[in-house]
Length: 86
Image (cartoon, rainbow, N blue to C red):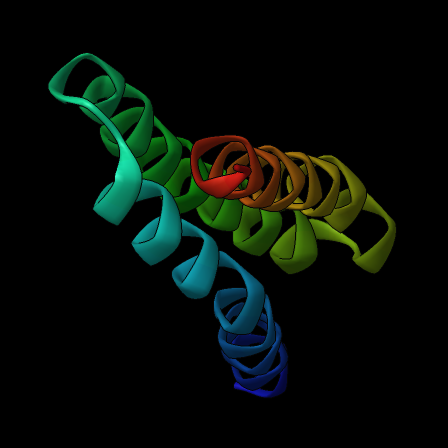
């Protein structure tokens, strides 16, 4: 239960950066870019599952899921900046 609580806490923390980026990117994109927004959401969810599964096996094995989550967050925030940059 303690591992599950830590995963949940970390997921909420990661959502604090992901959700604003997704909202900004989704609000400013053309219909062709909407596939990026959907794909980013799916990859984020998959990365969190990889993080959770790795953490259940060993704390060291959570690194691939965390790296994937970080990459999705950075790409989403970069896309939001790209869309809204004047």
